[in-house]
Image 1: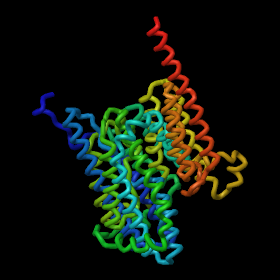
Image 2 (image 1 turned 90 degrees about the vertical axis):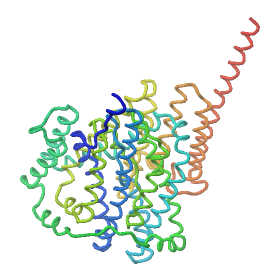
Image 3 (image 1 turned 45 degrees about the horizontal axis):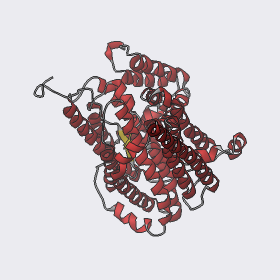
Image 4 (image 1 turned 45 degrees about the vertical axis):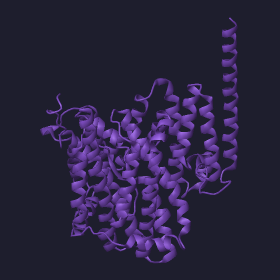
Length: 503
């Protein structure tokens, strides 16, 4: 194809499925935000008039920018199969900001609006930290093995995405199983559906209809949904800057929450970009981390208080054959939906069990990709990197309501789940370097694990010196063990060289 004839399409039919997958992923987060904030007594005028539009600004900015990046890569490599990175609010980080920042701020101040301003300042700081962290992104990408990064990501995909969403799908068995079958037939099996309707759209329409017809959903949900419709202008404000006074005052302790979760977010972006690199779309992780940080800061200026990230769902979009159109469409739809209350209406009308099977597909795609894009010898590294998130899932879902149940299973579950992303990468990288007999690099990651455990980034509930001393000692001992093999290898190489010279 000549340079003059090359054309990267603005939109193609494969973008439709990818759009619905990305839209519902973001929509699910917006629903959680809405329900949680209203449940904690935050006024609807603040939630629908400030928080939702502000969060939408961040989503719009990132989707447009990543479509631009896809176009740039497509023109550079003269390929029409480039897929734009999926982007939106980071789900794990969203929960931290809801329950680790917003709720404590509200409890301390007793003022929902002031608590929101503090959370805005926290989000702005988080975005700024991620922009600064972007300068190290490419170095980290070169030095952390792909099997470790994708294995960590597969752990999230298997538990919190594929597993959790499969459970949710089966809360409405007839609807959930049918929608899941449609997704598997249309996307995995690549079989044309009636009238060539995209699988995701077909599943959502028929699934919602079944839910109401069979009585799984009540018609009152429709009335509730339409009651939220209205005009909510998207406007910037100085609220974020007013929050700094309190964040760096009485709420200074929140910085201990913001720093590690922002590092987690930067690593999440790095992992997801690496997953796309493995699929053939080579994006610059530094630029992506900077975009995520800028998007977060921009959203906070408009009232959104949730950090953003490149989504794990990108691999699913890639497998659907999407381009840049789904990202642009998502930006446009969210601009309209946030401005007119459509997000709130849809979240009340469409049952979660209808959209959950789409995320099941995204999750299993990521797990498959973690194995298929690595050599077979690295499969053990992928597998061990997935396990910390299994512990994290158990800890998250059961440790608070029934901690004795988790303790009876094993006292090792909670510390393994704490800082799961870092633990997964450390264990996965160590395994890769053992397989390759690069014991000096395995030792470096073991000592890194010791340091992160000592300061509380791994195996501990909070940041502090001496947070997980037993783990720190364990990793340090493992590092010394690896060094003995490294020195042994050096000695053997020197002996071989000496024997070769003597011969």
